[in-house]
Length: 122
Length: 111
Image (spheres, each protein chain N blue to C red):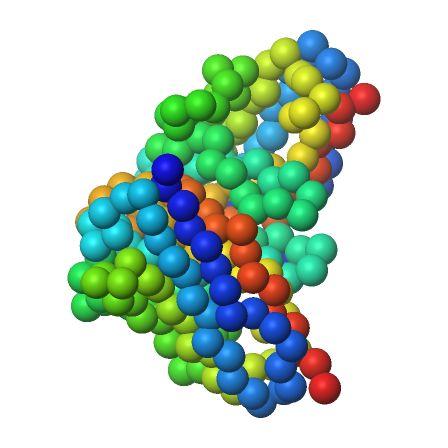
């Protein structure tokens, strides 16, 4: 079945770095744009970043631009998010999510991974 | 403040129908048919319930339906069941700098 599994979350100090991973299975990973979406504790959903199916195009929310870098390895069916200069306001559950439509950024997401919690605190 | 506006909460009794609205602008909901709805139970990941305004993914109950009029999209749940109690989020493609915007979420209580 189609599945996404995130890993790499944890506790990090302000200004620190963390790298999240998302392992995909059950579909042709290289056909789909992939996204990172986050949810701060008790808050709503916030789109963070996407990467095109080939990895050639990326886009970021203004809140993370210049600090976060999305990447993918289609040979390994894996998605990554390198997070630098972390701030307290980056504390959230981070979900990876596949775009619904192949070869496009439709901003509709299915499926979602189970999420990985990132806590930025001293 | 979220880009799309949803009511904070709605409630209904088992068997009843409820509708959740999602209001945006011509730059998002009103301009594109890439509107989607997600159900999220506490501690769980969001689940896609409706995509492209009114399409249901395989496995989603036909009690869930979506529509759009102008800049407002709506999710209707008919024949409410206890298991429908959850948070619901709308999302839309947008022509602004970030391609996806979400609503603030609506907490559905089944009385």
